[in-house]
Image 1 (spheres, rainbow, N blue to C red):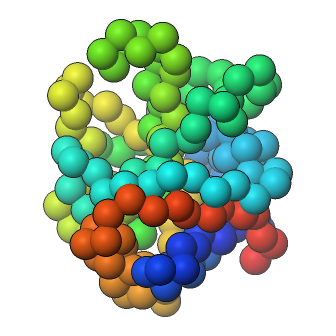
Image 2: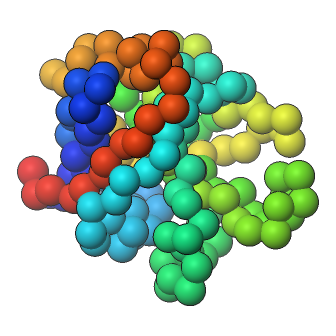
Length: 160
């Protein structure tokens, strides 16, 4: 079973999330292709969604890539739960006229999350889940990121 290793040294974030290809096949395929090589993604605590560290995939990582195609909502949620890794896809021009599609990997670490944005409700795909035994450490590290501000998070594929 394929998993995603998620780490950030300053907060001591270091967790494994189990990929859910049987529940979100196209979204899992996107992440598997994108993470074929480890990626460092800029991250920041989300403004609108509650307890989430938002990791928007840089545009440069998407240009000309076969995996950068529209994604359906699979294993969809509007209210992510602690430990959910949610891939959100926003089509071009939907958010403030941005001509580029947006792919965002959301790390949800606490209760009360919701996918309500200035553009309205946007269902995201629960594509992976942090291992239950690692969720307390995940929440603590995400709280440190919230207090410290922007950071770079490393994502890599591992076999569980």
